[in-house]
Image 1 (tube, rainbow over the protein chains, first blue to last red):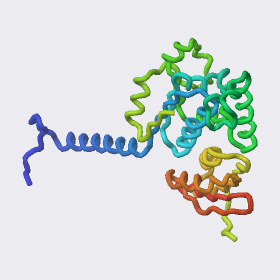
Image 2: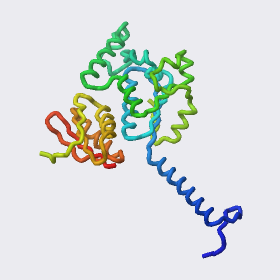
Image 3: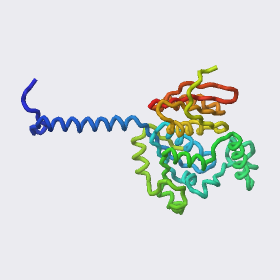
Image 4: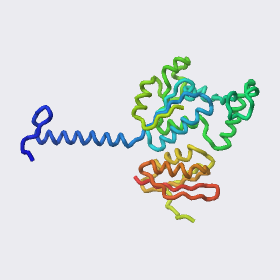
Amino acid sequence: MSTEPSSTADGTQLSTAELQARIEELEETVADLETDDEQQKMTIVATQGTFDMAYPPLILASTAAAFGWDVVVFHTFWGLDILHEEKSEKLQLSAVGNPNMPMPNALAALPGMDRLATRMMENRIDDNGTATIKELIDLSLEQGVELQACQMTIELMEYDEDDFYDDVTVGVGAATALQHMAESDIQLLV
Amino acid sequence: MSVTYDVTETLDVKGASCPMPVVKTKSAIDNVPDGGVLEVLSTDKGSMSDIDGWAAGTSGVELLEQVEDGDVYKHYVEKTA
């Protein structure tokens, strides 16, 4: 083993105290990296604004948060309506072109059918003890899920930032979503 | 009959379905002191698998036992740290 004083790559000589300080610094960096790795991250992109499609992102997000994960749901296009205070209460099932609906398209296309189909589903959800969309939004926010509203779509739809539930993150775009996605273990497009 | 646990707190989520049992369990366990046991009462059949999976993937909790008692699924979760 050499007794020569240690030196850095550029040849600068370091004292024992300096080396000690560097070791501590590196240990802290390693500890930070290890902590970062422990927490799972998930990003969901919610693009749909029908009654049925509002459920999967919110259920997965709130559950993931219960696991202690860092969760972001980026709402864009029709997915924005899920976070819109007024529209969120009026999300509808589409009866037309929905093969799961027990009615032919000719009938489903009649006025009021979407409303009827939605009410039927709402009743079933209530009977089953399934949470409402509003409850899931509150639950997600309580659990620390970050619900993001795409700024470009807010402007496209001519919504106002105040139209959204409190604690919804506004003023974010695709770059913000991508940044979280790049660090995420799980990325979902709904 | 199962072992009787020294239950610190009981969470009643009977009638609620996915994701409520898991999410409410998480919220409730946060308020249980270390070493305490949370009893969760649920009527959701999926809660047997879900709470098991949640406990396995969450640090600081240990699922002690799950009991099916008639229509009610009982879960005993210990807060380990």
